[in-house]
Image 1: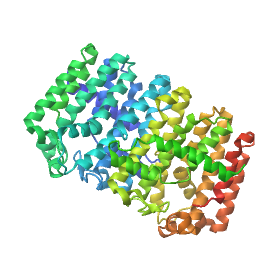
Image 2: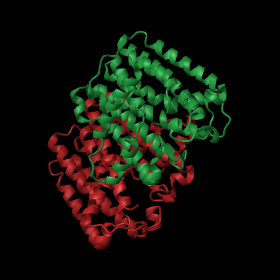
Image 3: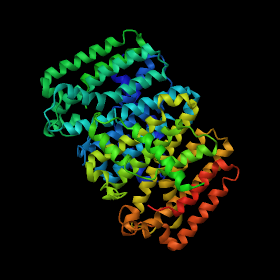
Image 4: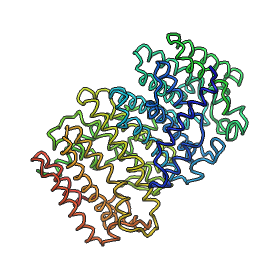
Length: 296
Length: 296
């Protein structure tokens, strides 16, 4: 399979759903929807929703009815970017080559747009029409996965640890822990939600979860490397911001080459986790490889 | 019944649950839990969770198993206070007589504590153990009510409208709309969630919803009046902040006495909505009355 064509197709599918999911133009409060749409529809590779889709496909489920759940992951991811970019957090002016949300809409509106997107994620997971295609138990499990992956013992917890570790000389296990929370748990939720959508057996869900842990780590390593060596064009923002901010990263521990090798090992391990799946898991396998070679 | 004793008892019940719901002391990330606990356990009348409990009681349900859902409403309410108090929003230094969250923990942590509490609300609604006492359909309906009541077409939407209306000469229907979103929809969710917990029939749920609309309005009117005439001690913060900020309020339209009368009419109407319920709805009736006579 051609992974780039696959990613493009799935991204269009997700984008199409996201555009319809936001309330139609002119609906009050207009400015909130502008602000939410600015970040939600402002590009982005849609890796998390695509991972959800690919995970469901590994179990031979591929209907559009799963898109609300996939989109929910992108809502959570986008809200986290908006809040992370705020002056009180990372204070970034650019994201994906465009001004950050608060630079365009002001801090108050950016905070609320983030809040709105986080809440919308749970709205999407509990839409009445989801009941036509998914059991109540599936839907509730998805809500639980999303809450755990994005909350205090997930992404939010990781962001706190990350801020607290700035300018501190942390050890590798601490760095791994920060990443497991900040990036890993939402990716794990994305994979597991796909598994739940596809009706995974407990054993299949376990294999998918192991796969998710591995690509989550690879994902973060790739991000760290890219932050260090990427061009402004590739990144959509200045390179080396982690270093300037005194953030410990994988390249800081292992050097750029060492970090890349570590990432490649994670990818290899991730692919191995899917041995029990047939060719339907090919997208998941290719995504694992793609993570370490991706740009911006 | 003695409404004050009832409220005290139910508040203890909610407080007891909230204290246990937060991760135990010393768990990482420690500072996040400190910040969340500071606001979540820092007093407050617990009106929303109590309304949920009273609504379930009106349908003769009164088991502690409903507390996760009731607590979820307080998590959402608390997160909204933390974010509203931020410098980029209302910029308040005091809340309930104590420093606001960002004054103690800094803005970044306050934003994350709010995010954590909002996410935790959905975690509480999807706890695995809830399945022992409630059908999957009930739990999923509760998630939906909470998401709708607190999101872009609920509380978050109302907060945006409220900020945008500052220093603008708005008409009464606009003010009513702001309040319906900002305060009303979460209270409606609180009442309806209690109804779902208690297994309300569609007709009962409709009556409860009408009741909720009325007390929601009364609640906002009482808040406006209190903001205007309350003492610093009663409010836990300075009085007259709405006026200073150029916020239109009910007293600004009708005068303090006129606004009070309007609130009393809402309360009367709310009580009338419960005619189909027996004595088990007495707490709901008393809460309606209490809203207009409450202090701080």
